[in-house]
Length: 222
Image (cartoon, rainbow, N blue to C red):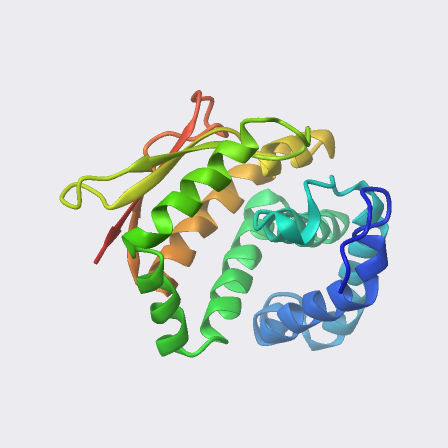
């Protein structure tokens, strides 16, 4: 797929992105049925997909496929779509957060463990660190207002292997612009589900969502 411009990047991929979201919904269908009833699941599925399609033009362009963080903005729009449908049904952000946690676990569990852990191990190869640091420096140019801004932090292989300090978060910017800042902490928690699934350890004592000046991710081998 060729990279399109900022005005139509997500809309141009509408069919693909809707199909990916529909797969996620399908993986948590039993949980949705247990919570809302079997007959409501089809309607919820349709509403979430409709809401996401409506959101597509509002997702900030941050470089498209050239920026690996783009996928997290797309997933935050998935999350917002779920949240808005839950709200319409009288639910609150905690209820939506539980569903999103289930969805995150389902996404990771759909990938074979050896692939997940293999990818996790590759992240700790030091030959990758220069490229990771260079990608972080690119964000500091602030080319895209909706992007993250980060700095790569080399570890000492004892307290941690490597890390990132984020001083700007694309998800925080997007959800604040969508008047849904209360959803942000629940998405922050999915980072720990990702670390567990990939087979490494994450600490992050500070977050922008909690009012800190940065998100200080520190990764280490288990």
